[in-house]
Image 1 (cartoon, rainbow, N blue to C red):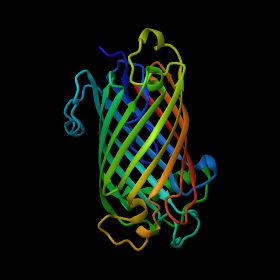
Image 2 (image 1 turned 90 degrees about the horizontal axis):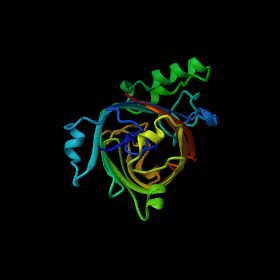
Image 3 (image 1 turned 60 degrees about the vertical axis):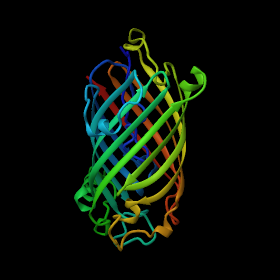
Image 4 (image 1 turned 60 degrees about the horizontal axis):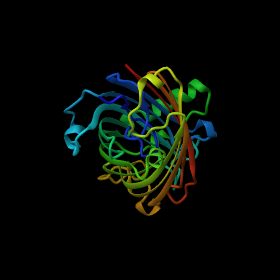
Length: 317
């Protein structure tokens, strides 16, 4: 019987990356995760400006849609699945300009309901995961209401340009990801390569990257003795870098089948992008706390690099 249950949830700009990390050193069947992203730390309020998400994972799920699509190919594979909801908000460089800001990030927001599944092969040091999302982009994602509420609460400038947000459109999203540790045990536990693809009516892109991990109990996809760690504070430092090719982004270009006058044209989109992340995760008994700083390259011609922070809190029960 496995002594470690690996749950996933960490926000990078590909979002919904419940396919990556957060180790829960627990044999509990259930896990709740809360995620919050914001660029307030860097005194900005532009591009990807904020996001909030919740997820529930249960290792006894056996026939969710994501599990039926991603069936284990090998024996001795740990499989688990869950459901989530997320809201993401995007704004131009200035939120105090009432009119349309030309050649800038359009106001946009979306809501997604998701179902994810993960297969972990301990012997091969490999994790394969997928996620299905359905939702809406536009006024019914309530980006204006959420951002206005938060800004009033903290005393920040109230955004005035949401009437120019991208039009409503239906979203169907699918993500597939493979992580693999290669080489000897030490190297495989600390350096992990990954590739993922995302396509649908929200984002179409392919991503390649490497993740480096160090900590006082760092064992990537490896069985651990609960007796040695259940009552001990575990820390893990993570750095990752990736390159991605972006073919379509609804948060910039509007709905795939609509002609939105407030959207950017395909000629303005930068197809070759890169991302960096660095942060630390703390684990204690059934709790986890993670903070990450994200650095994103320019996504369209008139944009500059963008930074934001993300926090994830998890609890197993």
